[in-house]
Image (cartoon, rainbow, N blue to C red; front, top):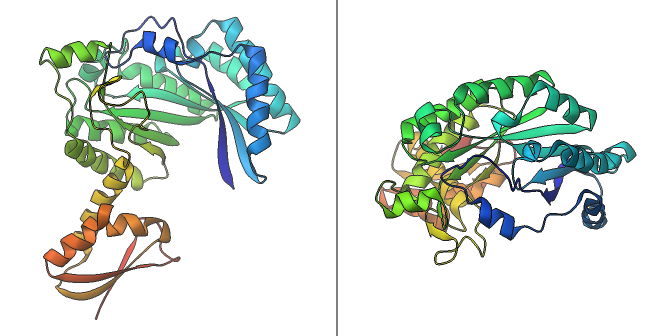
Length: 331
């Protein structure tokens, strides 16, 4: 069954933390924050357009939902929970910070039908967390993840690549830690420099170097390899380009590209292909239908690279193969 989220953006406008990559003033100016009784109209309008046979969730995104005033949070949850009780939606998702999770908060969230919580972990390295102004260390992430899993709530752990002090090795360790914390899902975001942030000042002063597009692709590929060996769902790879996140507007620098995910998967498939194709000549390469375009490569890059190295490859979809499985037949 396909999944659909009804997104409701509730930014936490009074966040006491100053993460170097975040501009709370821009967040508050960008979003029109609906009042609790106004989310009914948003939910109803989405329900009218969602096809049948979908698992539907109401998703509170845009900030740290459990960081807003408690009475407000409960008011939003009460309105959303009516749809769970009526059977119109199957659950409620929310995103928040690891240090905004407690036993008491989880009691409330469970009471009002919350089924999934995404934590902005960003990194599990203490130096990266401190340099990024996160306001907590890895032990807080571990504790929050454990509490969420104990309640049988679906756990998402988001990570960011290329934060201050970060390295490819540290990002790989973050991915391994996300696996060890038994996350059900993750999102992989390369860090970008946004106007009005501490990171912009660091970048302008030469104290921070942004990842190049090529490095961001390589880092994402290596991290993705770790998640692909597990049952963790990768919900997103790369930032979604928007009008606001364009060079010359809010975006100062960083690896944003409309085909970023395709480029990452193409690079991943390049590794798979050259590991499995052992001799020159004509070969038929069978892969899962969902992965066919990625295997061929972004703008045909993998097929062209194979030709340059003496491999004449024909790509075919095979419904019996799982993602990232490959069957090579030589002629």
